[in-house]
Image (cartoon, rainbow, N blue to C red; front, side, top):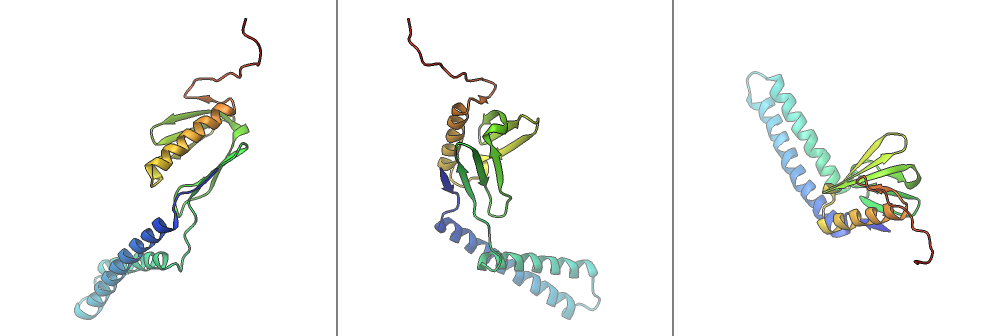
Length: 166
């Protein structure tokens, strides 16, 4: 199963928002910088530094919105061996191997994987833009954990042996 968390339409809308906000910040930073340098009798270093920071943040947002800096693909992928995901456009890709998972805790908008090594990994489904997709991912993880015979919220699932009922 593979789910693209930012379809093309949503990605374009996000980029347009970044571009608009970046132009606003960059323009404001340039205006503040020019005003500080040209119209003030005495330069104030803190104002000059603040204007440069605002301008730099604006330029980074313009670069992201215009596509000069590429955003990563946000996705969720699951197969019988592992789960792989990146929930944000700038985040790190994570991978969970089912054979390393001891238990799964599922609470609203969060899935916590507890590994046999004692480590924990938190999957924050609240970062997923579409609530229906987040619920679908949660249900898929629950079903896959049942299939892998992994305890969910402290409840261990035992495989039934095929046989006759007397």
